[in-house]
Structures are given as C-alpha cells and as structure tokens.
Length: 628
Image (cartoon, rainbow, N blue to C red; front, side):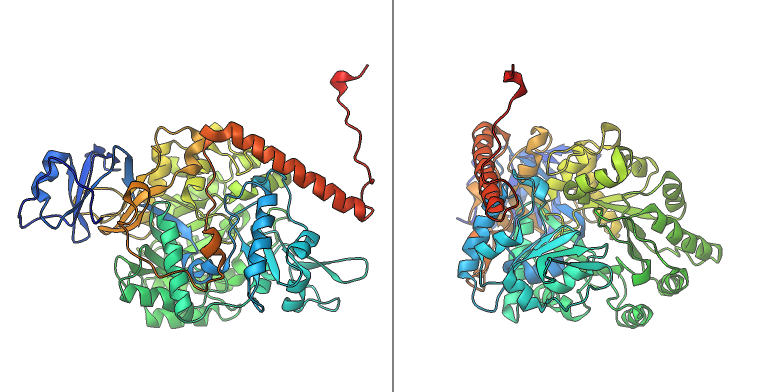
C-alpha cells in the first residue's frame, strides 16, 4: 500500500502538487505565527502548506501520497543536540541493548541467549543505555553471573562512566592477567590471589573502559553501512530526524566518518547529521586541528551531512571527567595549549563545542576566552557552546551569555542521578544542571542524550527528565523550580538544536519553506500522563518528505532496509530499545516485575551462601507490626 485513501480529497492535476500530504493530525508546529494546524504538504523535501484540508486540497495531485494521521499528535522532527551517532552506527548491530529492560533477570536471560548464538572469536557486549537503578533488583550483574551465562564467549558489560564487568573469557581476550598494571586513572580490581576479578573501575578516567572495549572485533565493509542504516532507523523510530554528532574518543577523522559520507552520497541517510571533529591523540591536538582546517570548513556539506566545527574536546589536558562515583579530578595547568587551540580556530572561522562537567573547568576556559575577547579575537562571529555543565555557576552563566555562547544539556543524570546525589548532596543535585537559569539569561539551550555509551538514545527518556527531574530509577533529583514545561522541553529538542548548527531558518518548526521533517506520535505528548512520556514512539517519521519510519497503521510505507548482518547480531533477535508497557498496564506489570525480582534475589542469596558469604538459611521474617 503506497498511500492511505482519504475521502473528500480528489486528486487534481496541478503544477504544484505535493509529494506527501499528512492530514487529520493535531499538529504542534512550533511556529508562533500558526501554532496549531491539521494538515501539512511537502514538495521536493520542503514544506509548502501548513493548514487544514481546504488549504492543502489544491496541492493533491495524482502522484501525491496522502496519509491520514487519524487524529494523532504531530510534532516537528526531533533533533538530538549531543549524540554519538557516527560511532554508535558503526557498532549498533554488535551490541546487546539493555535500554528499557526492567529487570536484571531479563537482561541476563538475553545475554545467555545471545552468548549461545555468538560465533567463536566474537564478543557479547552491553554498552550503555541502562543503569542498575532501572532494574527491579537495583544492582549490577556479577562476574560470576556472566561466567555462568557465557562460560566460553567473551562478555563485556559497561555501566555508565563508572565501571565494566567482564567474564573470564573476556579477561583472557583482552589480555588482562595478574601482571597487567593498572592504567593511569583506572583500576583493575583483583582478588586475594592477585588475579583480575572481572571488574574494571574508572578512577576517575573511563579510558580503561573504552580501551578495553576497543579490543573487541569490529565490523568491516558493507556491514558498517548496514549497521549504520539500522541505527538511523532505530533513531527514526523515536521521531528523531536530525542529530549533532559530538565526535568523541576512538572516533578518528576521516576514516570513521567514511561510512556516513558514503551513505550520504548514495542518498541513504534517514537522519540529518551535523558533525564535529575531536583530536584523538594527546600532544598532537594542534597538528590535528591545523590539518583539518586545511581540509574542510564548517558548514561544508548539505542539509543531510555537514561539518559543524571542532570538539567536544580541543585538548585532552583540558577535559574533565563525568564519573560521579569518584571525586572531581584536579587539572594541571592546561591553559597555554588550550589557548593555542582556540586562537587557531577563531582565526580560521571555526566554531566549537566543549565538554565541561564542572564549573571549575568552565571558569578556567572562560578566562581564556575573555583574554582573546580583549584582543578582538573571540568569538569572531563563530558559534560556540558548552556541553553538560552539571555544576555551572550563575556567575559563569553570566560570562557565557556576555560572550555570546550557548549551552547543550543532556540527561546524564537520568542514569547517574543517584551517584551525583550521594557525592554532592541534594542542594547541588537540584541545580544539576541549572536549566531554568540558562533559559532565563536568554541562552540557546539545546537538549540531547549523549548516547550511546551511557544514556539511551531514546529522546523521550530525556524529555521526561527535563519535565519531571526524575531518574530512570524514579528518584526526583531536580525540584520544580529547575524543571521546564512540555513546550519548552520540545523546543530544546527542535528549535534550539537547529540554532546550534546555524539552521534555525530551515528546520526546527513546521512552517512553509522549512524542511519537511516531522513525527506522528503514538501518544499525545502534551496530554499523556508524565510517567508515560518515556513510552512515546513515533508511528510515522518523515525526513525531507521521505517516510523513513512507519509502523502500526502505516506499516509498509517506509523505505526497505537490507537485513541486519551478521545474522547472529543481537539486534537481529532482540531489536534495539526494549519498549515497556505504559502505566495503563502498571498493576499487572508491577506484580510480574516484583515476582521476577524476588526470584532473582533468592538466586543471588543462594549463590552467596554457596560461597560462604551469607548464612545457608535465609533470615527469619520479622515484622515489628506483629511483635508483642
């Protein structure tokens, strides 16, 4: 079926016929001139009409695809302002996703099943998108559980920026022995015999975690394209139509960017990507930046794939870490080399973004910017922003505003909120980050996820966090005074993201002349109960007039993808994000989850008892309400 029949709209042979019309929708346009509408027409990738049936009737021709939204909510396509989409795409089909999995028991069952089908030489890897706090059991898997689930297949389970758990086979495959020294900023946990136990700790640097993961096999050839296309389709599933790639460690330019470049040339991207370049080698940053400046310029490309500048690191010495289970790291002097990098960028018309978790780092960076401003070199008309900024101060926000900067915030505390609260207390957690203070100063504040190695790529989890201040473990860490309403949160995921790439005049709202990017949602974002916001998905996602994701009544309208390869891929069997029921089914589901958690807890107690870590018999039940 190429289209859905709609009575009353008779095709007319017109010169301005639309390629696609979506009608009978509750459209939130984001455009203050016309905030609401019922129908939209798109031609040559651009919106031509926003209005009602009468407005679009003359734009329906014999070849127009007309889709009935069935009264559902439509919003502008979402734009993740900080997503590691290029790196994520290269690895997507290799990873077992625990995103949305409600119990550790289920996660281990998935892992056991995947290990049985994984061929010799390959690893089972669980990399980001989950937290122990989301599980009914509220804990990590143990190395013993990984050994039992996969005695011969290497298993690597990454938990936030904090730790990784490996089974014996993975320790062997990664080359860890009793003689392996701890790397700088990391710890290999060892047992009483001196042998590695399977636990790796970021202390505070996550380099030990990522360098170990980098030892696992990677995809080659066409499999990289297939993996990336399926990852982009998975993002389309949640209504994402654009993303800003923040680069990151182990993402080398140009070789790791070649897959998205080839897909863009073939017209096979289903997500618009604005990317950044991140120097990978300490001590070589200025040379890398100099070479890239000679190769390309910001805004090179088109609306599908374009360079947006440098970052999120400019020099390694200036980077801080975001492992809230560890104290904030103390930096040595880094300003001289950092100033050289910023000066080089400003003199050559390059903007940038900066990873900065702590206000102590932000203040030092701002001092460098203010020095260059006094020389007339900053910001020189270039876009620049700070990422993350969980502990940024009011004074620093004033200085950022004065220098024409912007902000990009992510829901990292959806997954690390409990750790942050334990270390810094409720006062600091209430303002981590101070979103309302940023907006009150008139700063552009884009929102994103920082997926895929820590947070999930599901933007509705991030929107829920912006609105409610709740973690995936249902803990409120941000009070009402530092939350935003639903319209503001959506604007942070649409209009603000477009502004961060200089595309605010072509996307982010549904308006004639803007790019035809939209999502028809499974639930009405503006009226659904707050606990159900994370359960929202897109039923129909359109990018540039192309239907790139379609399900439910629209299934079959989207573009066909090649099968997932390799065949043993976790994605081929489990998919990506594990959708969970909304609160309408909560009674039955909560009872089920409670039963699973009790069974899992008893299994864990028995395991500890066999090892002499707890008494053989369970403690007698005691309820003071029934004591005499």
